[in-house]
Length: 149
Image (tube, rainbow, N blue to C red):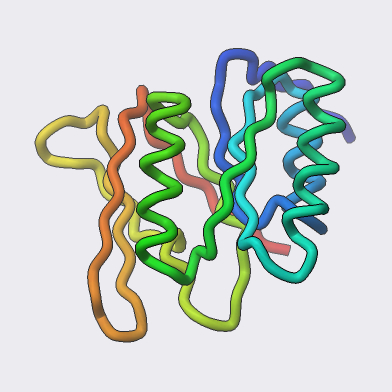
């Protein structure tokens, strides 16, 4: 079964996009017209794989796939990535949190809408050391979905 979705004008952050489900998700969202922020952790060949993927996607549609390196288990790396994404796009419409590590994933959020503005979601996580991290990006609407299989 095929579902046609038009994501033109939407920005999607996909963590763990360098291989497997993350890379395939990137291809599907790109085909639907989304602009992609592709995350990879920067080790074990992920930089080469994500460069190839983004190159392919950008050859299909110019300036449609951008790469952001950050290990999602590192709070400062995630914060720097989110600031870079905010600078590049201003907002994201969807977060596909696909990255997986045996350690904590700081973008495995308890997602809340900021009390100050419903247009600013706050992604909050608690790490193994119970340190709290929060990242805010402006967005028009925050939707969450959990896919399991």
